[in-house]
Length: 192
Image (cartoon, rainbow, N blue to C red):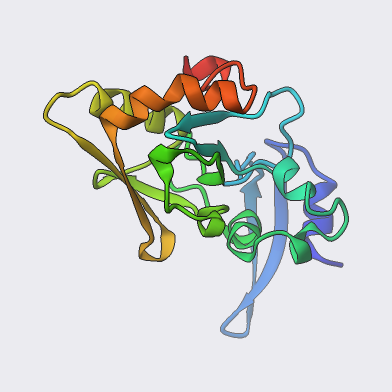
């Protein structure tokens, strides 16, 4: 029997007893089962998708539901490999950590030249600051955009890809981009 199967027969906070062999000797160990949160949650039925649009760049949080859009049964074969790898093998490093990535680019003059090649790219830093989650991204964008000393904002993705946007042009483009794409708000509710 696989350990995962046996583990599923128990509940959180139950104690599991198992026997292992170390250097030819049997050792009996016990361990409590805890509820390890995964980097990409398995279930998020009670939550609306989280998103943030800045200069036409749509950032969102990686979820199983997003991956299921590629195929409910074969998502691990049809979805982008970088996202599948994070969903299957990523480990939570910090409390409230999320994978924030570019879902799509809403075409506009402000993001001219930024191609769809950036779609599904995982965001790592903003102006050199490591992103923890989408709320952290929103806070950084607000802080940088409202600071007169910061004329540009730099989004750095995995594989050394980056996007540099003028803060002033991003502010000027927001209403236009939302109207062109029939989007009511530039952010999901809890980020406003």
